[in-house]
Structure formats: C-alpha cells, structure tokens
Amino acid sequence: MTGLNRRFRPKGRNWPLIWSYVIECGGSTKTTSVTSMAVIAALRGYRSVVFDLDSNMSSSLVLGYDKTALKGKKTSLDLIYGTATLDEVALPARYRIGEGYDDDAFAFIPNLRVVPSSPAMAGADTAIAEDPDRNDWFAEILHAYEGDDTVFHMDFPASYGRMPYSVLRMMDEDDFVIPSIKADPKDVRLVQGLIEELERVRDKNRNRRSVPGRPTLNHMLLTGTPTRTYKEAAARRAAQQAEALYGSILLPYIRYSADAKKLYEDECPLPVLLPNSNPSVDYRKVMTHLGFTELAA
Image 1 (spheres, rainbow, N blue to C red):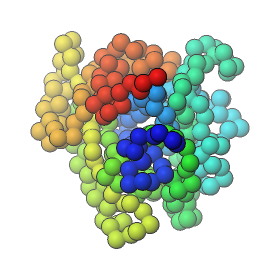
Image 2: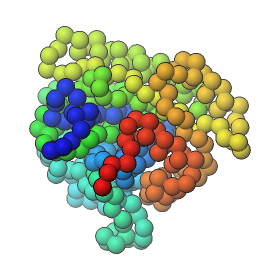
Image 3: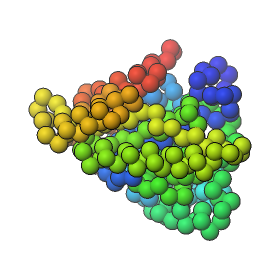
C-alpha cells in the first residue's frame, strides 16, 4: 500500500473508499454504471473490487462469470456466512472474446476483481436475520483488509433490506452513495425514498462508536438522457426534475444509447464493448470529474 493516495484511505482507515450504487428500483442501470465506472478506473490504473450483491448476477455476467463459470467457486454469499475471505472469493475481472470457458475465451481486465453473486443471494436478508452476528460480515472484511484497492464498488439488489443495511452502516461522508437511475420521472421520484432510508440508517447508528453509520447521498447518475436523435418528452421532464431537485449532486449526464444493453448479450462491459458510444464517453467524463484521471506509468 506504499504510495497510495491518502484520499483512498480517509480518516487513516485501512480499507478503501466505498461506493454504493443503490436505489429501490429494478432495471435502474445500476449494473451498467457500476461495471462501466469500475472498468474505466481500472484501465486508468486504479485497483478496485466490484461486489455483486444481487441474485440476478448482472455484474458477475458482465465481468466474465455466468452460472457455469462459477460452478464450485465461492460467491458473495460465502462472505456473508463467513465461510471464505475476500481474497478467496474475488476473481479477476474479464470479458468474453470467444466461445467456451477456457482462458483463451476471455480477456482479463487489469486492476479489477469481482466478487461474484449467485441466485442464492436472494436469501441474504434471511441469512442475516437468522444470525444477527452476520450483520457484521462487511465490517469484518473492512477491518481485516490489507490490500491496495482504491474503491469497493457495491452493486445492490433493488431493495433496502438487511444486507444493504449491513454495508450502508459502514459508510461515512467520505464514501459515496450513488443512485443510478434512468431519465424517467418515476425513477427520479424514487430518490426521495433513498434519502429517507439513509436518514433511517444514520438515526439508528447515531450514537454508536463501533460503526461510522453516516451514509451520504453524495452524487447521482442520470442515464438515458436526451440526445439529438433521442428526444423523448419523459426523458426531458426527468432531466428537468432532477436538475431542480438534485442539481447540486448530479454527475455529468449519461446519454441514451439503444446499444447499451448489448453488454449483457456479449458479456462485456460497455467501455470495452462500445468505447465510442455516448454512454462510454460520458462515463469517462464522470470518472474524470470524480478525480480518477489517467495514472502516470
């Protein structure tokens, strides 16, 4: 960890920044944002880990691991049960370039690992409820951490259950809560629910010394915004509403692209699959805005 910029270890702690992509909305573009931003940072020289905590396994798939590839491997549920360490679960991120599952069917992404999920993660809240000690699974990972990653990117399911809570309680103002939502008025309205949930987490942990308990809505991603050829009225209204309500935390817009969903079909993150597409260009602007410029060789 020698030479690691102090901004990645706020308050002198030993673990990386935590970026939680969370909103109680399915299909909100969380996975596209998580994988795109983590990959861009990795390609610029920053080491990171993507935690796939959603039973639909979207981040796992985009970063090279479907159900077949994960047979016999540890997953994020093993972290919650305490049956494996982070280094035992995290896999090198990759993307598909050929058929099959041999190494030559994939290209690896330097500086990036993924903690894969599984369908069994649908029971994560139940697992924590049945054993309250498991609420500390993420805290245990953080306190035992000794690596040199810069960010833990957390891809959550569309819920505010016990498992998301176990992560959010470990965040403070230096970490980022980043909802990624489509440019749709109904999605913009869901941000208020997130604000209320974060306040609930802070209230519950306000007088506790064992956890930071201060998750903060620092930034917001609006995706699928209008372009010269995509001029949906709903998208324009959503952008106006987001500017009016959350203009101070809005990151550069992620413009609409009909091809963006191909990352799931091709099992390849968007900045690699379509590097010149509007969203890829915009995600690079976002990472530059957040201070993740190209590292010197």
